[in-house]
Image (cartoon, rainbow, N blue to C red):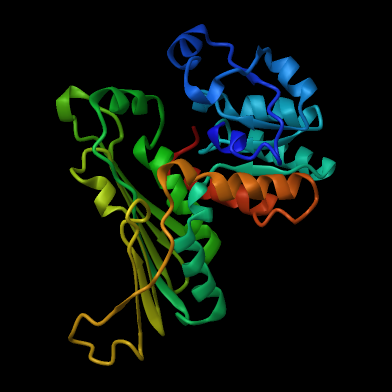
Length: 310
């Protein structure tokens, strides 16, 4: 909401809808909702050309489908909820009506990730053999209790970001090998210690999500290893650091030889700006949505292969 309100030349915000009184009491006075009307879900859908759907995670697909059925473009928070069949029906309806469906995987618009994708697509890194990705945090006891409602816990909520990027690079895996563990830290038994291996014909992708990792933010990492070069982004944002090693930069295989890549960081309050501007461009027909319906479905299908259907 803060992101769309930063661009009044692009968006006219008609209001917000929240049916749960508890959430209204907790968050209704946040700055992002200042001076906005609280309307019903039906009023929001009726008055809008496009709807941002961010609600309790289990309800995301249900409310997004209501918007699609009414002919409205949608941005849906991630990860997508409901069954795979329900999400497929949503995407099929959107495709038939030529409506934009954007999911909230903001790392797609991270400047370092985009630079990495350019290197991969140009062939600079050669054939990709491995991807090593981590998105961990040291979460509160309350947050880890909240994770209990989801199969896969932290892998479902955070690993989905990494699966999105991996599927963009390598496509859907042949096989998946999930390791979903519960630490029991502070008496909370959620899926908070997770790891997965995605297997391809030649490549391997590794994903780590831990909700009790001290300095987990600093350990967040996305590294791609190819036949001609390796790129590491660590941390991924907020003091982002990106390094590159190619066969020219690192001729000595027994030394750490790399160079820093100059890349723009993404301030906390700007991490959704590029994503929401892309949504605008797609909705008005100024540009094609760079992420197809088929890609969105492949990401969700791969996620459910890892954690089970939520």
